[in-house]
Structures are given as structure tokens and as C-alpha cells.
Length: 192
Length: 192
Image (tube, rainbow over all chains, first blue to last red; front, side, top):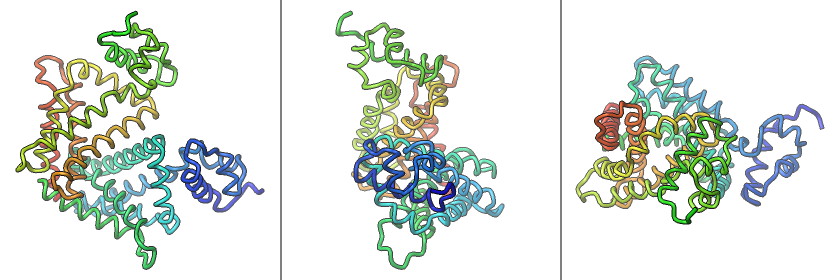
């Protein structure tokens, strides 16, 4: 098996999620995940430190896309408009494979408290990245925190709806996320 | 040592946080925590399943107080007024010991990714409890989610300010949490 294996990282994620759903997270080993993905254990460890980190693969790049979008939004953009730019960038990275993985990922996380904790921390990391980028734009602290939480909620709700719906006529994740963000903006108006 | 030990649970929490700060979370054992608290390991395990759960002790009772307050708020209360009732109930449970523990707890969590994950899941649990209680009141889903996230942020911000400030003239946690909630309500108005 060659050292360079195109698609190995993605195959490992898909294999892991399938095994977590089939056997449970605790009873799934790195050896089983590697075998299912058709790679060696060494290849696994070149991509991930352990089986848990595999499920939050991409968290850092998502957080960076969110923050970059906020930073590069037009100077006159409102905080939520800046968040929307960040969400569009992050959504553009999510393709058909991410979509197909959604329901199984949800099932795997629902069945494991360890994965729930890792998943919760992932949301905290995304919110923190957005809050810092908003504060750099001069957005007041409380507003930055709230706008970031709305961004995280919109991303999660949009992803859930995108993953759940019929696969035909797919316009990508972004429209779902932006619709969810608009729903949360209305909710903010009703609470204010 | 008698089986009934008043204050053992609280002494265990204080001892654990001190040891986590002094030695690091990973290098602290249940035996050391028990010894520092002056109880046996059996007593430890009558109160907590492991050292990690000890730091989120009270999460379920906090979530219940938040939800009960929301449920029992006047019928004509707005969603945020109902959240404020929940926050007041939960705040009333936090006494001088909780306050004194704040800075050390923060240091312990900051130094351990495992505790960060558990802490993040605690916030998710509190938000879920509030969202469910708000939806039962007939609050629309997006509004319920957002109001709950505001409640969690207000509780965390209020607790941080309460713990950080000079200990004299302490009026309790509630005023700090309600001030933070009002700040977030203003932020929602600015975002809407």
C-alpha cells in the first residue's frame, strides 16, 4: 500500500461513522476502521490522533472559514451580515458526502456521551472563532457573543435540514443555513 | 468514619478543584481527592461515578431549576421574562462556596481539554432543558432556542462577574445574571 492514498481521510471518516452506528462507538477499534476504509493503521494515525478526533475532523478549517468570512465582510456590514458571509464560506466546503453522512453522524453522536461532549466542544470552538472575529470588527462583546451563537445555531439547523431532505435538486448547504439565520434574526426581533 | 458525613460532597468538590489546579486534572486520582477531603474512597463513589463527573455536579439540578422556573412563570410572561424566572431560581442555589470556587474552577477547566468538553456538554444540557420548557409554553422553536442560548450566556457571564469581583457586599449571583440577560436583550435588539 503506497504512502500516498488519495481520499484516505474521507474514507476513514465514512468507515468510522458506519461502524459507530453498527457496533457502537465504544466497541469500534482503530483497526476495524482502518480495515473498513482499506488502509493501514499507520495511515489512520497519519490523519487522526485517535478515533474520537476523527468525528470532529474539519472543525479547525470550519472555524477559520467562519472567522475569515466575518473579517472580510464589507466594512458597512451589520454583525449578522458579517456572520452570514462566514456561514456561506463554511457552507461552500460541505459537499454531497457531508450531506449523506449527516443522518448517520447524528445517530452515532446520539448514542455516545463521549461523542456528544466532543461535539459540544466543537460548537464552542466555532462560536469562539466567530466572536473574536466580530470583536475585531468593533462589535460590542455581548452582541458579538449573541451573533456567534446565532451563527452556530443556524449552521446546525441548516445542516440538519439539508441532510434530512430528499436528495434531489440540491442547491447546497448555504441556502438552508441562511434561511435558519433569518429565522433566528426574526426570533431576536421578537425577544427584543 | 461514619457512613453519614455531612458536607462530604461539598468537601470533595473543593478538594478536587484544588488538586486539579495544583497537579493537573490527568495526574489527580480519586484516592488523592478523597484523602484531601478527609473521606474514604467508598464515600467518594457514593457521591460521584468518577472524577470528571464531580466537576459538573449539580448540572441536573440546575437544569431542573431553570426549567421549573420557566414553566411556572406567569402565563403572560414573555420568553425572556420566563427565562429570567428560571435564572433567578438557579442563581438562588449558588452560595458563597460556589462563588469562591469560580476562579479555581475556571483555571482547572482551562487546563484540561477533557474538562472543557464536559463543561461544553453541561451548557448544551442547560440550554436543552430551557428550550423544552419554553416550547411547552408555546414559544416557537427558533425563539425558544435563541432565548435558551441567551439564558446560558447570561448565567455564565453573570457567574464569571460574580466570582471575579471583590467579595464584600455580596448580593448573590442573581443580580449579575439578570444584568447580563438585559445586556443580551439589548444586543438582540441591535441585531434584529
